[in-house]
Image 1 (cartoon, one colour):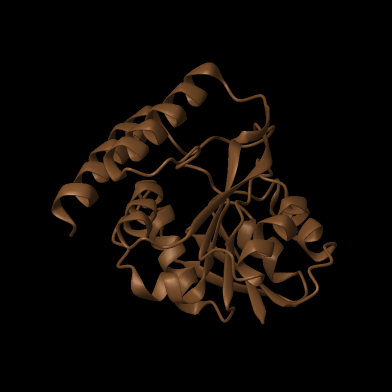
Image 2 (cartoon, rainbow, N blue to C red; image 1 turned 60 degrees about the vertical axis):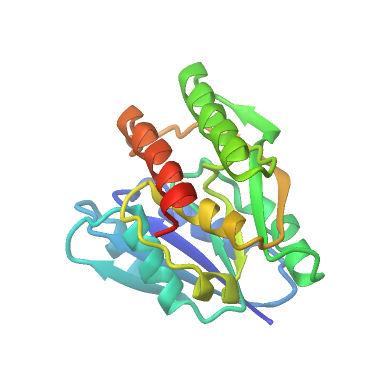
Length: 225
């Protein structure tokens, strides 16, 4: 059993080193690799990662979006289990051991870390409302109760990623992945996590991304492209 911890990053020089340090401090009990996909950063993100031991780095020459960064990472991952870890310290690596447990025990194909089942620190009302609205739409469209569709903590058996045709290039990748998982009836488990609003750097997602995500949900549900 091997685990890939995949970190998509774009201009996260202020936090990427600490995220990796915390991952390395974990006792996962299995072999693992840390894979960073730098999606065309214009700051020192790549330079910082290059100086760290036992970290694989893939760089995009220009910014292509989170969806494209994830697809690059999924294709390069060597693990039987793939964990998405954001680089901005909004999601804490200490939650990873509990998130991989259902996969290791054979009780799930996919695990989502749910912010709304866990603890929220600093999430704005508009951010929470947007997330809950998209999550409700997901539950209604696909007939399966989900509590946090847009979570950045998603964990997969590698074969799931090999069997769903992810197409989204930017933040619509969250509904793209979720819709395909639900349509294919993979076993999805949600577990509580902590969420902390970023203290440094600029948030990448916007209200327009929320609208695009809703449109993408509808496309997946009714067009099944």
